[in-house]
Length: 213
Image (tube, rainbow, N blue to C red; front, side, top):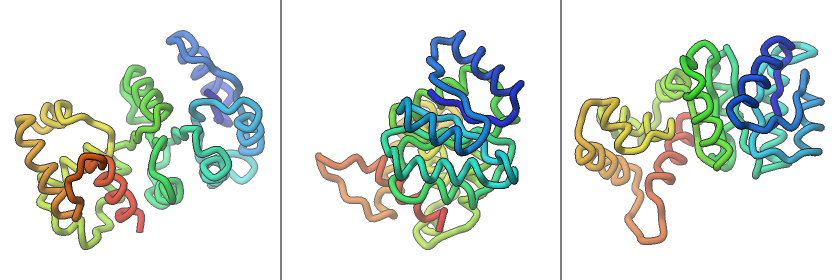
């Protein structure tokens, strides 16, 4: 992986922490230009990116992440920031919705959770902080407005990368109930059942594309 973080202390701490848990840190970067150069040189499985980086400390990181998505679509991007901005998430989610993550620093309670999200994104999955998803969800769109409150909860958790079993545990319902809610979401999103298609992935993609609109 490549880590882009302008705080030297945090950056070095992440390197030490992740290396101790079996991750290979190929390079670190203190600004967007260094990040882009490092990814071009090493082509990592995933890049961990802060949003506000030098020189203006506004959106350099997210702009670099968007560029990396275009130039290196096989590299996962995990935004790790203290800022919850749905507009920035929307910019990152433009185009193909895979290998993308957006976590809030203060809400990551355990190293294991961060590592799980990191591996998920590196493998082409999606890992979004519930607060980010919630703020995007509040924008409201026609198809989303068709969903019941419970169906939105299920789709919300699906977008965060949770399995049916995990969703059942979090919502304190049966896996069968989760399956029924998911099937209802697929129907309301006009996703027909075919052997070749993964409706779960398509529902999440459709959801993310609608909430960023």
